Image (cartoon, rainbow, N blue to C red; front, side, top):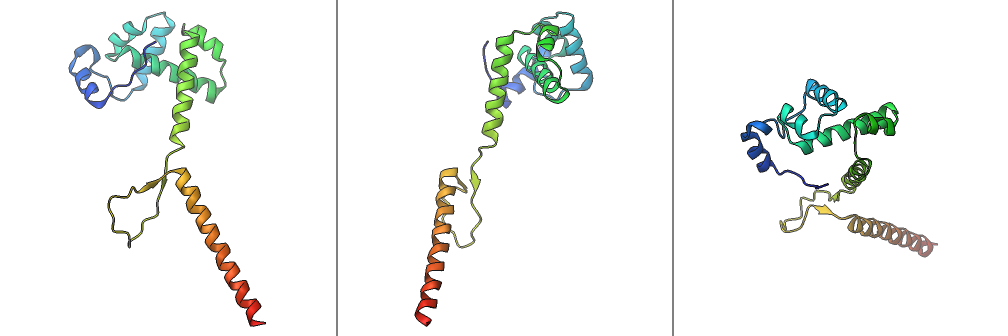
Length: 159
């Protein structure tokens, strides 16, 4: 299976073509129902794509997302759905793996540095990596410990 993603400019090109004029546009409820009924009747991804004026890859992705939703939210049997919609198991497993990796990356976004009005250098990034954030936290903790030691020394000297 070929994996690819369309860029916005590619959607513009696809929308100029009558056969894929709905590519990149939001899905309507009746379109998804049509997709599911046609796939239940053993229509190919290409046939469904022509009917709905979308790409065959978007048809396949939408079907896979629908199955994931049924399994995850409504606790339906995955193997029964794979059989019902005549899906290649290995292709679907690859899709799920890539979907999980994508959602994992989404939660690993860099931390945003706090805004400082005294910082005038515009060349520094406004984001920090998790590594930089750990160093920042360690420096803060070290400074807190130094402050405590300083206060304890004052108390000892005062006695």
